Length: 166
Image 1 (tube, rainbow, N blue to C red):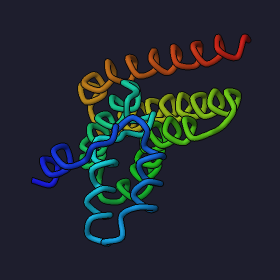
Image 2 (cartoon, one colour):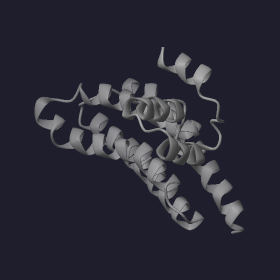
Image 3 (tube, rainbow, N blue to C red):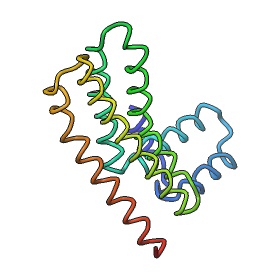
Image 4 (cartoon, rainbow, N blue to C red):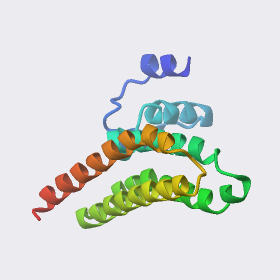
């Protein structure tokens, strides 16, 4: 219902968010109205990384890897399992952090870190398979996603390097 109120009663454009926030601060004195306006402005907003297919895919891979780690023995859930979880969570986290950086060189650096974390995760899954904590078939279920995300990260890096003229 709040969204209906917003679009029927708000007469300013969603595109110029900073102006709208300033307008709301300058001209709306009722705190409840300001909260409604702020919700109206921010509801459909997305950070730039949320629009990236590579970030979205890496988030789904995090869930898949967490499911695999649940198969580890209890003692390994807190050793190798912990390391696998940290590595895979690092992939979407570094993609997001990189988009928040001001320079293209920094953005490239964080994409490279995300790629490294993805490769670390794959390596750790292979070690877990070698040690008998998971099966090769378990790795085979996530390998296509890992491969796809690695290609997307390579493409993102190439795109950023092209914008930087490297």
